[in-house]
Image (cartoon, rainbow, N blue to C red; front, side, top):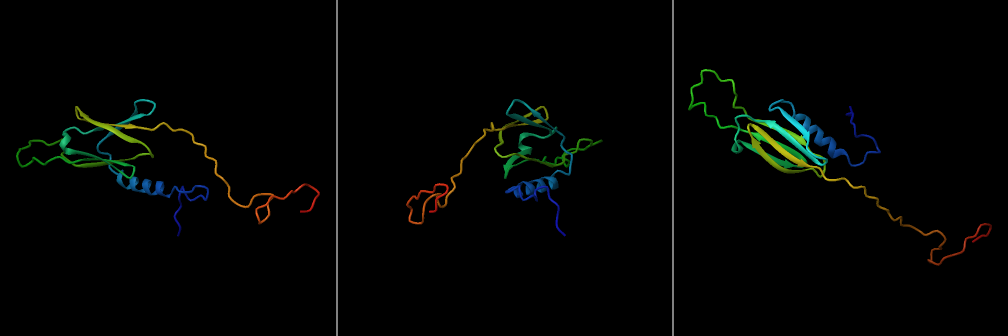
Length: 156
């Protein structure tokens, strides 16, 4: 049984890596914790904000690998040192992944009042036109490379 794919058209060449990234991202995005916002800060700037109350900068790790931004949080467990009458704030670890388009760069990260801000920059897309030379036998030349005159109505 063959698998249906968005990228199985013969006109879409070289997009198989995008399909693999989307499958990997779909597997990692099952949990809704921590909540996050994505905002456009300028024409080419984006900002991801995650609500990470209770996490310090030492508890957080941000990596970019193969166009995938990964944010991990792991708090140290201090439950042995404290006696809780009620524990409503869970010290749970998390991993949140975002698939980045080609060329998007992480320009910085800041933790402020329980919010982790990650700034991204999109490159300005410039249209490129490239002319491709076609190699082969030239019209109007014989095998010796000499040019022959081909006029309509004459045999050559």
